[in-house]
Image (cartoon, rainbow, N blue to C red; front, side, top):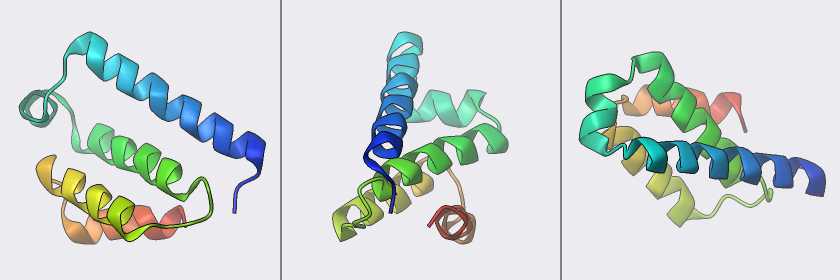
Length: 87
């Protein structure tokens, strides 16, 4: 479980990522076209850090994580690896 400070950092990091996407007006289609596999995995890693930040993994959050992985064409096995390495 993350400390309150670590939770705040994870949330800030995710908000910064969202702002960057909004600035670039990135859509799933654009992400799939323009982002490398490494960049997509980094997105998922940041997302999982946010999901796990409060120490409680809600099944809706976990399902959303896997849905985003599917949308950005990251295999479920790779998404599971990201999840396990950051759990």
